[in-house]
Image (cartoon, rainbow, N blue to C red; front, side, top):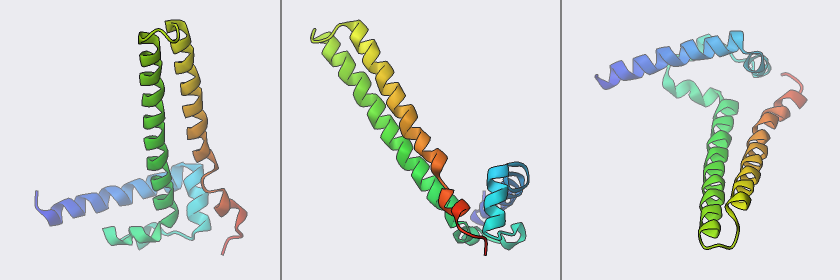
Length: 124
């Protein structure tokens, strides 16, 4: 596929996705209204710069995913290692795994607060 064709396909899918989430997902509908975002303003992939909120949210999501991956692996490998060398029993290793899972869920819950600064800001 030629680069121009690929960019056109990406642009069409981007426009379609923005329209769908902006009309059917209340969270993004509200954000787009607050940002005075118009779907017709996206005419090229370079226009993504007009969506700073979505870019920040995407970066935060990627950071949290990486943190959760590292945290999960450390808890699992640590529990296995400690259980293997006999410092803790397999039952305690399983409990350690559950605690690690709970920590990951709470770490991920930080994304729920994303965008609250936009809600607090007056439109305009």
